Length: 134
Image 1 (tube, helix red, strand yellow):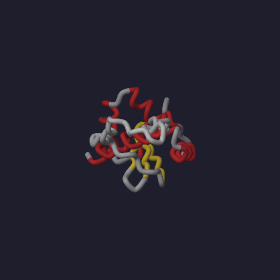
Image 2 (cartoon, rainbow, N blue to C red):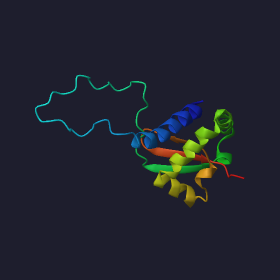
Image 3 (cartoon, helix red, strand yellow):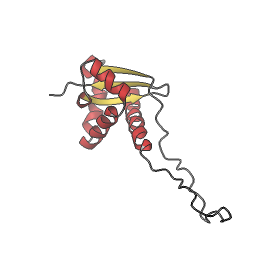
């Protein structure tokens, strides 16, 4: 059960990084005169429901789905059964955008299309679970 929660949280974390990196800057350059009053609308408070930014990737582990213990493999397969193709594609694009993850996959003979799930912990350890496409 812990693996499922970590996998779901890890997927959210890994996807949050590229999304937040492309978010537009909320502050516009000050084009007003120096004596102008600040705008009457206060900036919005941060959303407490928003996911925390993903920690920086420090280490990457690549694990083949078949190498996982049977209980964990069953949990991962159950999680994969609920995942949409769009979610899987976003995960794979996020992996492609992370040079450390991409090179770790390639070193093991995999590519992003082989990734089925990924998780990152607070210490920055990224675990990528793969299954050979085909």
